Image (cartoon, helix red, strand yellow):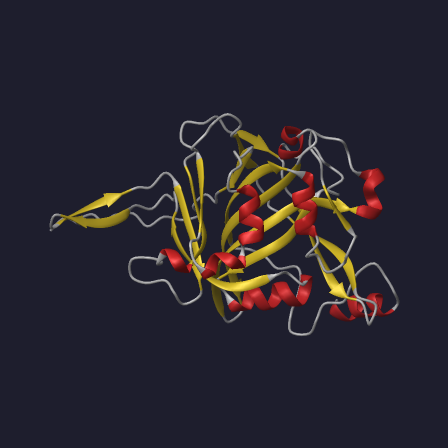
Length: 306
């Protein structure tokens, strides 16, 4: 299959080649994902798109006169023939579309977009920054899609089915968390008690409890990238990310305090400052969540009769 793709690329075909040492499709064993959307000034989104290597090939999408910046945290598990891998990353995206397909982009409100009504999937994510804690994922993202990925570490608290044993006043108890907390910090700077504030890129918390959730057909997500095109610069590309279950979307309009974004305070913040500065004072428009159901469970033991 790889040979076929390489030949198609050499002949000027639609499919770019797959670099040696990599393979697609790549299957996820588990996938936990939370995203947050912000409606912002169009000029600020366009400025962020200026970092995309294939200049002018993408245009920021518009929803009722605003552009949309959307970041999402992912933690996923993958099986390989000789082992397994767990990866955490955050994509800091501009919702955009291929400029050459402007006549094939539907006019949607933000809520229609969030519900997955763009069945053309011409609306997608242009990644501006992607902090990630797994070098193999960084290598693959750069080689396959020219992702702006860099090494980072994470300190997280996630609403998962498993309880967390904690010792308080000399006694053990089990705690279940029902909110999200994600701190993204500089590589190698996470200590026993998390990160020093000067080493934090940014952090966010999300409290979606008791909010109505709408099942939405958000996937497949179109994710844009680029590939060097000889000496003539870069050619834009797109790839779908399929998620085989509905997402839950939460309307956050008018609901202050549900998602709290905290920028870093030191040099580490400079790595994402251009993006976070645009959204840090903006009320989120919505949040979207995908959580994997358990596939097996180990139960407590019981005594057998003597």
